[in-house]
Image (cartoon, rainbow, N blue to C red; front, top):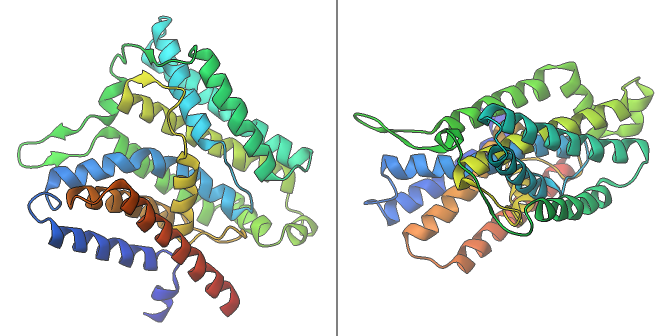
Length: 315
């Protein structure tokens, strides 16, 4: 039992249950309804998927500030592709390919030129946002989604409301991401680099190759998040997802990830992402203004970081 409570994601899970119970008690008529639960899951999809990639990045000791811009650029590319006559599969693949390329560039600049990840991704954040605005002529692109929107459509069942396909996609990405991080050689290399890059290099870990692979895979899942964001909005919006990178990083930190590297779990990250959604939805249901939501989110992030520091000192 003691070992269970030492697991990084157990604390966030307890916090999630407590917060959900609190808002259920405060607003039982609406918050505890099945439709609201499915809606919260739906609202967590984009952040949750992008946060899986961010988990790999943070565990290996990096950071990515360009994820929000990547998501926005993907929505623009998918919308433009659909409007140009591509079918939904081609448009989706085009968006995923460009997002993956963006991740590869981040990894290559970080690994080969030895530029600090913060600086690299700060630069690409601006570049990709500008590219999205240029491709969209600084306006939203309306395009017939041709069924892509069904990925995020809530399905009414006979006895209960079923989650949209996007929720199951996010769950699948989470499972695959967790397996890759926890049970593969690639995952062990990621953790080793985040724990001590010099030691990992001396032990024969191909550090540069792993870094490039981490950022490339993170770009791919950010592109997938962008496709599902387009499915939600049904427009290509170059101004979308501003600040998304902060939510994604917060989800990883709340879930037990350490910005120092070497520690984190996909399960904890998804719990952290859902916790952020529950707080926002709960505050809305009880009538609290947005500024209260922001304060509560900030307090949770600071507390999570404080716990991380105390855990490191204890080690």
